[in-house]
Length: 225
Image 1: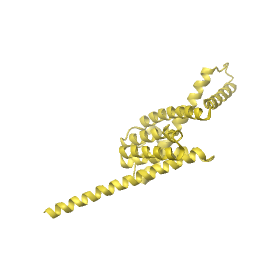
Image 2: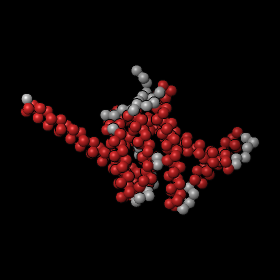
Image 3: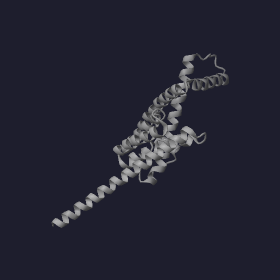
Image 4: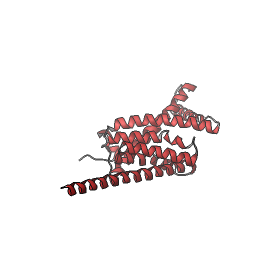
């Protein structure tokens, strides 16, 4: 009897140790993969859209597969790696918005929250993170990078006014509002695309996220059975 209990205890300990080892290995690999994607996004002149789309997914996948603690460990390891490789300023910029976005999406997908909630809060986090990153990069390069976005918004407003022959002269407040709207729309599209990619890919990696709401079935390409 004692031998049987000892064997069972030994088997359980081995199983727990194996599970912890797998979690540590996955955390290390996915954090390193995210760090490489961030470095590629930061330094390579091509593939920016692909790298940006791929950035939040590895750590979100880690959290869906291994739990919230593993997700936090992955983000912490990512920041330490990037501080070593890129310095104490450029490295932590990955948090805005990609690090926080991966934590939020992983947590909401673990909890099986509605897409409407995870999408809207994710877009909010993405917008705030984008603005913080623009602020920090403006300080780094010594120029106001927000001007680039306001110029794009001004050109878009002028185009719309010309097309519809509107009796309107855009002032600075309207241009700033249009620039912020462009950022919000960009983040809405970005976070929805993350949901779609995760919905298609994660089940093949022994993870899953909630099904999309009916309104988005046609857009995501999923037909309920």
